[in-house]
Length: 238
Image (cartoon, rainbow, N blue to C red):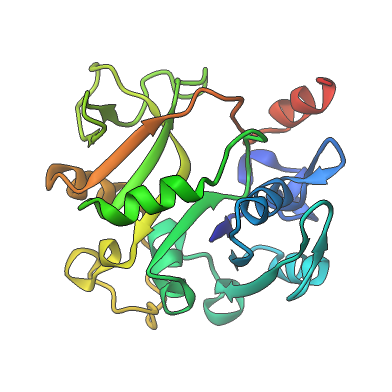
């Protein structure tokens, strides 16, 4: 699942006419870097949630786009804007899409640039065998998030620690099992028919406290393309 529903307020005025995941880095839409990387790793069935200017995303890619180097992939959409008139935030959007997702699935934000991230089938299989319900990839803290988000134990578990412990930033790259989004934890039935908008971080912190979230440290290039300045900087590099 590629998260593509946000308004991108900090990216204005660029996002006044274009959804942020369609903004380009090196002549390729941000979200397409993920789409191609997933397909290269063997994950050809993908889902995109939309809200702000979401019709542009489906118009661009349709249901069976032919992408460079990877060929055709199969897309589904969860059009939160069409259904409710607003974006459902990360947890609300995932629960809305849950009926169309596999028992284990990747999630990444469509406005992240990490061209070397590997959606590894080996990692997927290791996660399938583990008792964890989620596995996150953490990155060294960027200047805009110096305090970080979550801790990381020596045995590879994500930790809900208060600042100023050694914390890392959540990259948005993650694997989840459907059980993570059980109504017992989310308060939302599968499919989120009421259109509840809900953030993901409280669910992650609660699951970390239950010992159900693994984590890995990713040290490759990674940028949260949240401002026009960051976008210009990326495009100025070779």
